[in-house]
Image 1 (cartoon, rainbow, N blue to C red):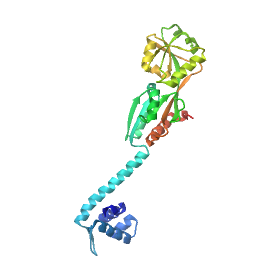
Image 2: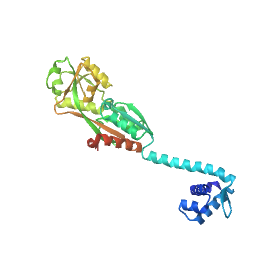
Image 3: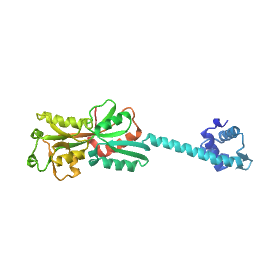
Image 4: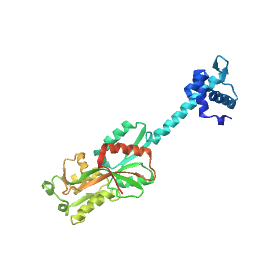
Length: 303
């Protein structure tokens, strides 16, 4: 018969166990005294055990009642804890969030976003992964990561994509190169230069953007090296292997022998937040709420 015991039976029992008076317990519960008496009798019938000794003057717990009181309190506390946990998870306040990001995004607003999120949601474990755009998009589609910060991702029917930041592109060139001393340098001026670029499969959008800039300048770049890391790209430029077109944030890497020159027309690259349309999670929404609060009005959804 224990499977017929309801949570209200436990609440009624504990109120009476605390008050040891039917009238006060009923008032505390916001019900009339007769229904309380009926439910206490019902509980004792279900347990086949007397929980209270009743006289005309007093109500006292039996030994069984005292034992049941401790267990009933534990059960209600566990239920309250479970309900609270569900509500926190539903609001994105607990659990794990796997966030990937392209390397130079850490030079922009992402560290502040992460710090603010940790302060607001201390029960969420952040699993942070540095990852190029191509692998991020694959990870979002197959469920290996929950949220990505990618460069120039393009449209994707499986992903929700929101532009969160923009930054200019720069021409990266060795300081000793004859072109480096010019007051202004265009993409067209690089037509005869060897290029260091990202592989297309790792950064498809940025690769396409650089190729497009060169194509509009009237040539296809002569790519002599493909580098899988931004750090390596800048190192190769510093070594005089070639020139490159990179996000402006790479200037913070601090290579002394590399000069970064603006591109006329303010060519820029987009950083977007991306997540799966089919695996939307409250914790992702919570993180994006922090992003919106910090990045502000520059955000826009991709259609």
